[in-house]
Amino acid sequence: MKKTENLRALCEAAAARGRLVVTGHDRADVDSAASCVLMQRLLAAWGIKSDIALCEPDGQSRRVMARFGVDVQALAGETAQEDALILVDHHQTAHAGRVIACIDHHPTEVPPDFAFVEIGDSGACAVMVLRLMQEAGVPVTPEDERLAVTALYLDTIALKSAKISPEEAAWGEAQAGRLGLDEDWLRREGMGLMDMRLPARELAMLGKKAYVFGTKRVLSTYVQTDAMTEEKLGEILAVLREALVRERADLWVFLWHDPVRLRSTEVDLTPDGRMQTISYDYLASRGRDVMPRVEHEMRKGGV
Ligand SMILES: [Mn+2]
Image (cartoon, rainbow, N blue to C red; front, side, top):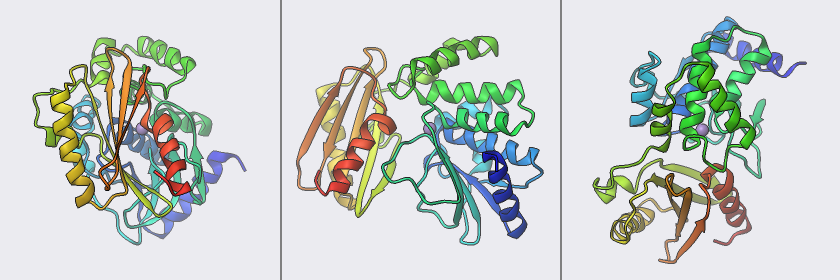
């Protein structure tokens, strides 16, 4: 059976039995929100009813999705034990429900065992969902394409992250032009430079994600800035050391990306007070470059 027919059959069966919910990762970003919206449009084109449940959508997703007429706050919600879930933009969940499918772009050594699993290498999950719509032969509007291309810019630090291939970056730029997207705005939003006058306790918690690798729990946050100082970094690390112990994690991976100088720095903190710093002479991708190495180390039992 064709891949999309398999997905359709699974979703039809699940929706006939109860609620079908599409959900992105916690602290949903633009890519998660856009992936949910496009997935719901694919399901609707198939005549399948679904709900979207976003967990704690971030400020950028609220701001950006509003431009597409989507109120992400209205899509915020919880899942229940009896729900059937489609995970987009992630493949591990701590939320209630039975996962029937996942579409994601975060590589892992141990792919999940759901009825439908697609883990690809696009710079944005929303682009993967757009491709599914095209493969399924359902109508794709320029607005759907604009949404996917916007997610691509914002999930790849304006097409500069190592997680996007040169071919896809060129494709994204060409599509932005063809679709009449405001590229200056995309670049600014994509770089997402943070105001470093914000308190360290806020800067330390941006883009927070939790990972489970075997028995180990890893937390990670990052900031995009061209103005990190020794002093600010010291304050941020102090906040993280406390949070690491409080949240009983085995490792905290903090990254700061400098989209202007095209560099990333990773600081790994462990509960025993040790710290490891890794410098990248490019914009490293958390999902593509950093977490696969961390996953490998954690599953081996070391840090
Ligand atoms: Mn993503």
